Length: 331
Image (tube, rainbow, N blue to C red; front, side, top):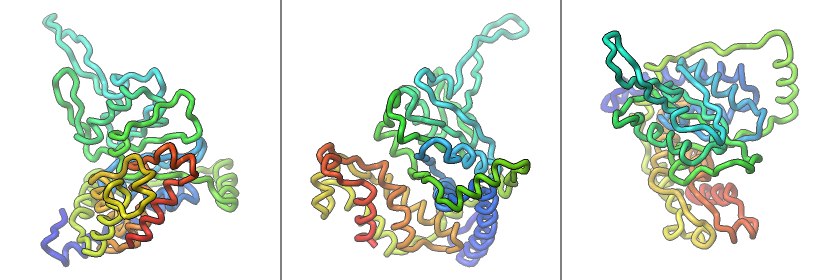
């Protein structure tokens, strides 16, 4: 367990963690080609103890990424395909009437797929709001309540949800409260020509490289504690505060934000950045985050916590560009 009062022990632990995390990235890279930035962002969120929303078109290896991440981190994982007819009980589990040897009847709770360490919520925006909200309590409080009794989910617990940006028909946009529960939103881009060529060669032959486990659940929990023990400089803290407040209508000095942003990031966005910048620094072999980490994580931490007004979208204002400019100014 990391000791934040002993700088030498912290440095030694961070160095050992850096070596292990380099192997983690290399192993996941065997299964998912050319998505180094996506892998880094997913690992940053997991090390920070958070959940991830993966946004990308079908066929961009999002499921493969989740499976490889679970295997390399040594976690149990499960997948739920979200559909319009999916019910909360299909995720959480349900009580069934059971009978013991003496003939007495009682209710027994049968756990659903949420009781795993890494849950892939595939196409989360296709399920009804009622079913989406069933995830909410578990994501935030790490337990679910069925029939008045609370059941803890395994630790560590992470939700990696996918969302298809193209498919709007039959989709239910995630409510603000649910979006805010995701530490980062990660956009999965199309591969470039060279990477696509490698994908075609590597995935259509007889051999298929399987990533090997590098960590286990206990080691991951220790790394998550280490991330929280890492120091954050005053300059980085000031940059995070300036960025989050500048993206919020009413406290921003940017007239575009005050005029065109319908709702902005709350304090949870700052908390997400405080944890994610430390995790990114650790992944890159550094003991403390820099202002560059804030700029790199601004878009993944903020875009899903902001919404433009209808007028802004009509004028062609782009949320990604706006966040990038705010991050540049806060640096």
